[in-house]
Image (tube, rainbow, N blue to C red; front, top):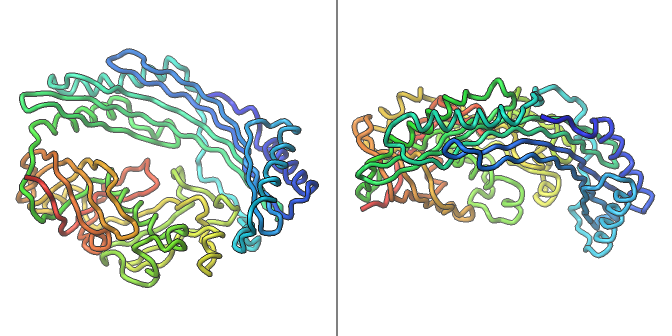
Length: 443
């Protein structure tokens, strides 16, 4: 992985020059985010290299205020004349923007003052040949699982690094560096029943934490073969178990419903949910921005506000929202340090993963979701799905061409078990989720 062309100190110095320029041009307030990133991405198919990409990007975003008029402009040119022009462009936009009484920088009393090391930066030089070998080994392991694996959608290996600084005219300045490595494979299996496709992947901050290429590939191959012979099931109401790779999407939909923009626009089915029972009592959700090597760790949010570890859901009760300064002002509340999104979310398990099928009994085990049929205004949920039919705690046969439906409000309250099969490379650390009942449309 290549070195950055600017050090953290140089990015910091540039940010201060931009703030000074904004003041000199008449801005009453300003903030700036300046970043640089580089990465390598290799994909192979049937053993041959399909794509080889190396990227190096940099950018600066400047937001200026004239009272409560706001303007924003960005550039990829770090030269001082270009930065001056970027500030001028932002101010020109601000002059033509209506004043917004809720606009402005965050409260300086809430800015982060402590900056821990959360082990997010683990640079390791990756040569192209090594990346190609990793992807090829991953795909080869997937194809070797079974003779019925007849084709491949390919495998990929990627590494990236980023360096950034955020600063504002109220005196806050902070930054950091991070790395990310990923490996994935997808293959196709075929028999007399038809063709099936599945995949697997892994993501980590440090190369040493990434699963071996052979392991990732083997998982992809095994998941594909086990789907052969899939068929529809009868329409009915059944218990539904979402595997861990999908359970995070259920948590993500809750995050969207209790985030600032959905709340102040009154476009959420969870309006005024603070202090109410949103989930089943077995569900608690902890936000931990300080998780070592976490995919969403950090000491401050995108406005410089200090992050904090907190329990957002306790025994099913909603204890907090996800707010930035703007949405908090609109709601008459205080920012929660979530400008830019939620940090690492941890959902403690209630069951061992290998006990969940027994807990399910007879019903549907979902391993793939299709489409985007989720309405956050009403909570209505309807998505295409595939997976396995389970009877008496045992997988009987694979399932395809079905739709699962319900309402998120009911689904959250009907969670009866959470597994311990957490995917470590996710910012939503939740295992498989078992829901008491959903409508399944089949044949």
